[in-house]
Each structure stands twice: as C-alpha cells, then as structure tokens.
Length: 261
Ligand code: GLP
Image (tube, rainbow, N blue to C red; front, side, top):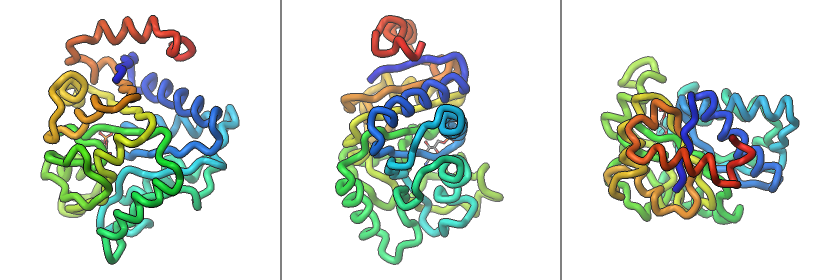
C-alpha cells in the first residue's frame, strides 16, 4: 500500500484523474472499476475536463461499478445508475453498452450477483478499481463482518451507512435497506486499486484502514493485502496517520511519482 497526501480535495481528485488518464492512454481497452459517493464527484469532474480539454478517450473502455441499491430502478435519481450518468457517463465518450452496474431490480438477486462476477471475468478482470470509504470503513457496501474473500452479493446496510447516505435522499426512510455490492475478494482481484478520502470526518477511519490491524469489521483494512493499492488523501483525512512524514518522503522521492508532484 502507498499513501499520498495532497493539500486539499481538489488536489486529490486531480492526482487521481492523472493516474486514471495515464492508464487509459496506456491501454485504450482498460477495464475500470468505478465508485460513487460525494468524494468521487470532484474526480469525475476532473476526468470530464480531461476528456474535453485533453481528448481523453473512453470509447473503448469498459466499466464495472462497485454497487447498486436493491429496489431502485435505473432512472430513479437516487440510484447509482443515475449518479454515474449525471456525473460521468453523460459527459464523456464512453459507450453505454460497455458500462455495467449491478441490477438492483433483478427478480433473482443471487443469480444477478453470480452473473455480475462472471461478466467481470469475461472481460479479463478489473484493471483499475476506484474506491471511496464509508465513515465506518466500508468499501463498496461491504459492511462490518464482510468476509475478506467475499464475492458480489446482497448486503443489508447498517444504520450508520443508511444515516450517512440519507443526506442524498429526501428522508432516511427512503434509503434502501439492501444493496448489491462487489465482495472484498472481488475488489482484491483488481490489478490496481485507488482509494480516495477527503475531509476531517474520514481521518479516524483512514488511520484504521491504513495503519490498523486487518479485520473484517472494517473492510477497507483488506486493502493492506492488495499488491498495488494507492491511497490518496487530503491533509484533513491524513491528520490521524502516525507515519504521515514517511509517506510524504516516499512520494517526494519515488521516481514513479515524479510526473505527479
Ligand atoms: C457509499 C458507497 C461507497 C462510498 C461511500 C462514501 O456508501 N457505496 O462506495 O465509498 O458511499 O461516500 P462519500 O464519498 O460520500 O463519503
């Protein structure tokens, strides 16, 4: 795992957009794992800008989103289908036929989950997976006690997650109680992961995820097992990291990061 500390959320998004753009330019057929949430909005703005101003071409990319609520139709404004169109898909030259999100309206949710896993395999696996982090440490909707080897499945959302996501709905009662999410094992299979977190409210959980013991109570700690995971945080989210100075030194000295400094 490597940790990059940036001055603010705009710089976090800009560095992440730069990493993604580099990967897309190196492999036009990149399979991108996408995430939702407020943190990602600034990143998608950055990618849209790169598409408009620097001709970043998504036409041959394939995408798989981490999760979707159960019971929301794709055109429901609170669905992650809608989120993706609003913040990203409608503004770049991605072919919508190459974009995938779990179908939270499927009659047979379990077989939908198996099909989603099979589709990821069919496309050769995820090259670059974007991740946000919930306040309680979930990645995707892998709530506490999610098995570290779990695959795509239906998860009941915890009261903490429901409360956290309620601000995006009209009321807490409207937040679905379940979601389909890639499993922790599915995420760990991605070739590269990029986890973003900004703001003081993420400082505690980032310290636990990066420097704490690996536990299924906090699914983000599983990223310590990943071979190539980059965590990009702003100063506020980094404020409780014990070894922040060491991470800064690495970023300042690793040749790999030269073009990003
Ligand atoms: C939701 C998503 C997660 C995301 C989290 C954090 O729960 N399912 O994938 O990481 O929100 O969202 P935010 O960036 O708004 O804090």
